[in-house]
Length: 120
Image (cartoon, rainbow, N blue to C red; front, top):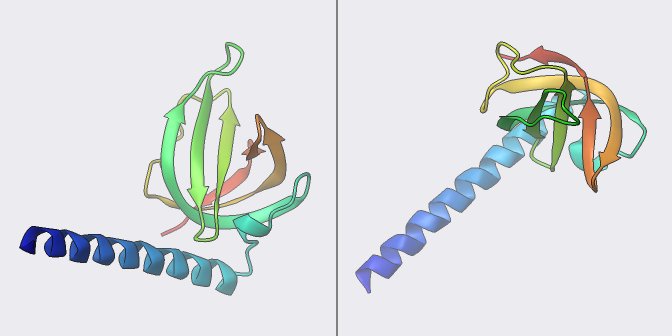
């Protein structure tokens, strides 16, 4: 019984820390005047900022494509750089601001070849 209660406390701490991280990301984006990922509409030009959760190399039609999932606390969007195998500084856990046009590809919101700025 003590193990179950310890496990529940651990899960509760983990959940509250991820909620706090999401709130902190949203607060930072709002203060910077950036758009919210959750509010991004298809075919609109956006400025979003957040943390890269994943970065993968996924060829598209024989062309290399570097994909990253950007999370800002409100939601996630896929960032795709076509023709790139690697970009220095683009790694999981990095804070980044991107600017580009939102599209939908395979039912997923994406921004292709955005302008980006690595954040401290």
